[in-house]
Length: 183
Image 1 (cartoon, helix red, strand yellow):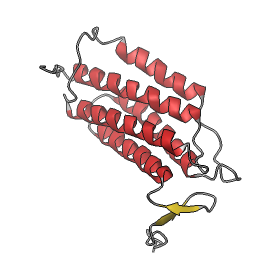
Image 2 (cartoon, rainbow, N blue to C red; image 1 turned 90 degrees about the vertical axis):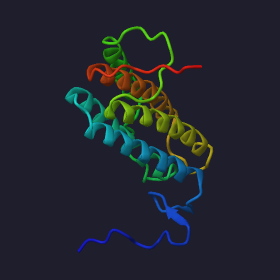
Image 3 (cartoon, helix red, strand yellow; image 1 turned 180 degrees about the horizontal axis):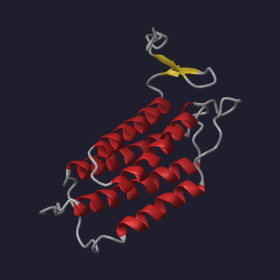
Image 4 (tube, helix red, strand yellow; image 1 turned 45 degrees about the vertical axis):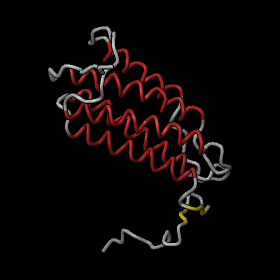
């Protein structure tokens, strides 16, 4: 029978790939957790998506987020660092996706309230989690053991824009009108 726990973290410390152990309150674990939470929220959006092409794009994003998490969890100074997979081409993929999806949308002239369809709402939620994850990764990059680099930060920055456009796209496709703030 497989064991799904070790008990090694019961002391409030956890291990990184490569063996370093740090307090769970460390910025690196905040970043890893935020990226994981983002990945999970995107998964919920995929589950509720009515657009297979968008779901495929989002699943590609999930794979990239998993790589970012592995980069964060690895020992930047040892052989445990994973093969580099987040680079300029990954950022370009997001930019192409933004262009593709935004080409179907009317010009945005007002702010929109997060919401809409179920999938669109989860994409808006994912966007806000992405912004927090980006800030957490930037903070974690200040720690000596952080492995994520500038390309991962650029990816997360572009991803929040992609998720916003994806939310608008799916809401439009599902016939849900965006709501504007009344202020």
